[in-house]
Image (cartoon, rainbow, N blue to C red):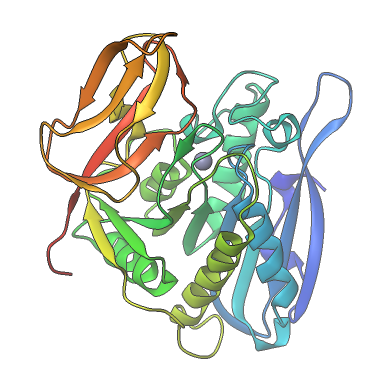
Length: 327
Ligand SMILES: [Zn+2]
């Protein structure tokens, strides 16, 4: 079946189905397919869409989506669960953030293009036929191979119904850090959801190019918590209040970039509280000479840092965000 022919109502009530849906023909003549996991409850209710693997080098999301689906009893559900463990399959196969087929980052090309490159077609189809059919989107990321972020859930901090639902779902998720964003940069799954009036949340975690199973378990529990909060599943969310409630732009391209080539030596770690002017890290030459110092341009909490020491001019190194004093 093609993804553009997929209808959740086509899955029998009370059933769980694994579908392989065609997205686009590949250069080698094979078909680019997404595995889509659907559980349809006995009773009517909201549709939750959970995406993993939008970036190909992030592994907690795919594992969590499969874990949640495996544990679901469709006869307990009210509404529909749709999970896509790996959304950018070519990038996953290559173990890279962007697709090897067209060099594109799936999280920057939404709303995509029906007749575009492979990544643009994935965006178009996922946007129109999955995101467009859901009542809440959860996009599970990690910080990838070269960076670290704390384990967090991000939401749309907006004075609107979409914003209120995003915030409530983020708090129900139960991550140690929640991060509200007053606006959304274009090209993302979450900007696609915003444009369609659909509430969303996304997650991040330390990354490093390997699977952190404890974080994947936290993600699975978080998705289950949101399903309870939406009353898709019975019971109350199992969560503790967040340790940090942060607020600011989630646009990582706004991070402080290095201006020289060399060895990046950090002076901070994620969730450190810093003051404007504090040293965040140095770029060292081959013999250890200091070529550059990176200093905080604002007070706040360190939310993102590059972890691969080898750097070139323009590489994003550190990002500081604001903190909400009372939640
Ligand atoms: Zn990602």
